[in-house]
Length: 219
Image (cartoon, rainbow, N blue to C red):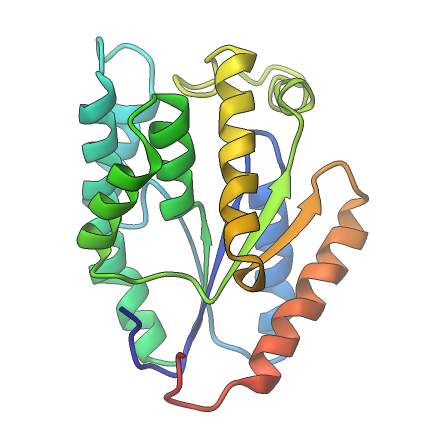
């Protein structure tokens, strides 16, 4: 199900350490400098309840979290995010840029935890009432490179980041499978590329989408 609004919805996806936050910030700054109204947000999070769930599901020290509970916690945070933050911003004409969205659940819980892509996707379609991005920017990162990036300096890994490389490899392939199944909705780029080069390619694709949009049409 698509929604009718003048906004544009962009999701950044990829494995941990891919540089999603950096590129989301670069895109947001570039669009704001061009006069666009931009909302930058993240998952899990974006709402008070979402931030609490983020802590519960990502921080160490909350005991064992089984795969289904984990999937439901992410979906609950996403339901609030879509209803309370993303839809209102799109209805107001903003460009919404989120660091992670449904694809992360399909990859992490569907593939990484072995729950299966179909069930996780169905759950999240229900949670968001069928709200999907206009464009998903997938930054493809090798698991070993991602770990090196996210543990640089004094950085520590959260509960999911600390999973073994085999887990992150399954996630990587799940992301790529999603992009391959719907290529027109994705921009897949190597996370190892130069930061400025990546930012320019992403901005170019987004500007093309904005130039082609007709207010009120989210086909």
